[in-house]
Length: 368
View 1: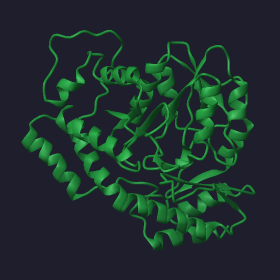
View 2: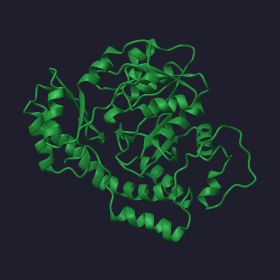
View 3: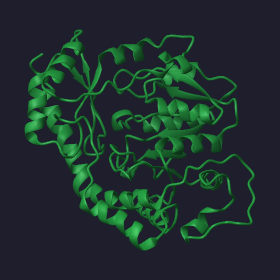
View 4: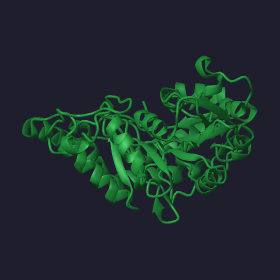
């Protein structure tokens, strides 16, 4: 079987976890988390602060909560994983489903602008398949309409725009480090921002709202005489997760990023002449791809699904639009998003794919 995605971990990650278990004696949030945050800040650059949490969903939840009030509306593309929507409602806000641009599969600002009301407070673009091509437009839109910009960059770790890494500029940027992302910490996520109010709000909220508890945790201490002034959650990252993440970060530029770019370029080269599939244009000098989606034309997606199944090749249908889900169902249709969903399929993308794997997958697709 050729896997759609997988965690690429090994001896170094195991040894790092063993170090935490056997020598530090503290498995919760402590010094190792602090070290991981500092290393992430150094890697991303720009002087932005990093706050690590236990998932990308938690990162989005706390970021949204830090810049909104209950009942505020958030403009968000319907074409995203449900975690984006759950983070919005967890913060007491209302997701306003928007179309995606059919060329980029990311938030369509023309559609979003039509959905602005007096309650709209946040623009939440999702960098689907690591596509950051509209990042400048999103920042300008947020500025023009006086909105906070919370970026779902779960797919975009390591991507670069105009010489700067995503997370080193903008308003509030959220990453995911779950098992199949560009780097993993087992489970985990991070918020990047230079807004001191957001930094403090997220730092406290991840530790049950205990005021300024993070600094003590980094030193292996606890707060006993403390205050709580806002809703908090048990969202902190553990030393075990951070130990895995530190090793993964050290491997990213030398191993993971080049291999992901190589795979994407090879797919593009082998598939670009196929009239039955449409590729999403990407600059793989700047983008580190997390997934590799295709839009299957001429009603042939079901046929491709059966071919991939027959050859034991995993695939993804990413994602079922949220405005079609019972809990988030909208009163209006989003025809572009619905059309994209009827055509999209993701093919395997992870650093352990071989040339033979890639060629086999493309041969099957080109047989359509």
